[in-house]
Image (cartoon, rainbow, N blue to C red; front, side, top):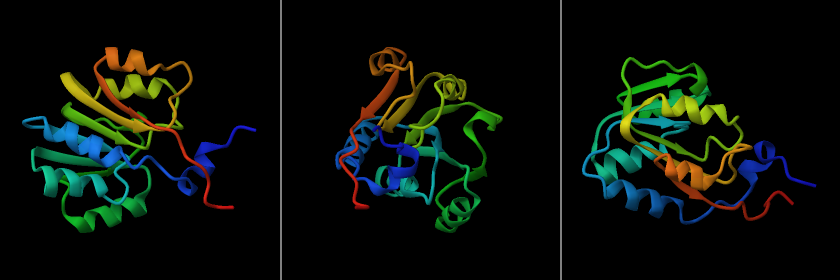
Length: 159
């Protein structure tokens, strides 16, 4: 039986290579410009972007859980934070870089078209996720300009 990733997701080991891959890729960019952190959660990505890399002009966080946004606000690393679903988020300006780490695995394929509309032409979309929405192929994403880190979930620790 196929596991329900949305329910089991927080009980599995994730790839230990995500952070080095993300940091290496982002550090190679001179400036990330205006960045949208989709599914910012408690703000881990903000630490990486603002304190380690330091090549961000403006950092905007987005999450659907108000309690996580409240906790992320305390870090004082984001320039703006929003409680919103990516499908309903309508910023005034497009972003140079969109980062979605471990958040799009359970969303429909049309979400990818939506996030493409939030990024400037020649901007960067960085995804790290265990599964892709149905009908979406990694090769297709890379051809469309995405940077994708794909990994497999490695078992459950809830047993």
